Image (cartoon, rainbow, N blue to C red):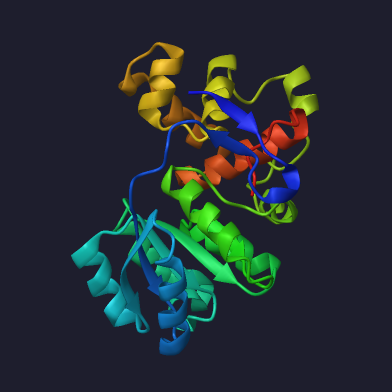
Length: 248
């Protein structure tokens, strides 16, 4: 696939030539039924998106995910039943629906909320204060392709929450005792580009099981518990070493 760099102010840094799915299925979750309906109607005007459900209660959402298994779950940060208690309920829901990529809509950047969202396993954190619907649609498309959507200003929040020793400047560590082997570093870089395990295996000319083994060792060395944390580390790592970084 051919990748190119877009205008860094546009909100999209890396774009691939292969098209997104014909229809990205979306469940919209907002505690305000009117807001939920309006957002769903706005998104349906995009012919790449299909809003398959709108929910305003946690009980409805659990049933909706079981019934529809959407590509994207779009959740408002005002949905306290889901995001309260450090995203406890949302974490539980996402752990039971690994195929669903979650994007949180928020009106403002609050460091502990941003960090908590990604710890919960969300794939995107979108600031909707500017009401930029077109940019939100791009965000959903990128997340549906397996990428992470994160505002550049949010990276510092996430780096500061990384396990001790990981968030520090990696340059001195590479000059002495590297934390990751060169092949593990290559896996991390390809992961930051948005590639899935099978695509990484093909790029590195190894088996899928070999990549799984690499991932296990990387998780163990860096102290991470899920793929989202690793992608965020990879993104922050690339930001410190190269301008070709995949961010929102």
